[in-house]
Amino acid sequence: MLTIRQDLVDAMVAHARADHPDEACGVIAGPAGSDRPERFVPMVNAARSPTFYEFDSMDLLRLYREMDAADEDPVVVYHSHTATEAYPSRTDISYASEPAAHYVLVSTRETGAEDGPYELRSFRIVDGVVTEEEIRIG
Image (tube, rainbow, N blue to C red):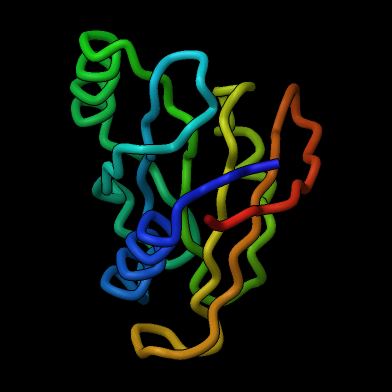
């Protein structure tokens, strides 16, 4: 189960809406070993694509150095889907390289960049196996 604060959910949704029609992506870091998402880190989708995301390799290297220095883990890896449901694609599954992370998807397919309904789901992805998990916001 993913337990996450409302402000972090709001930040992911706002990022997804701001980058629409391209997919947004980022990480929420937390204290190493805690499974507590705390530090919101929006990233640039280097692919600038409405159908997939890719972290810029230099940005990702910088982020991992920051997390190492702060004794943090990538607790949440998030991205948005702009035209499809919030479920990992084959490409998303192949990119999932953090077995301890929660992979959160935000779908903006209904409202795009506007306020309104969105879909938020969380998954564990380990060795290509996708398992949906409950989200507790609080």
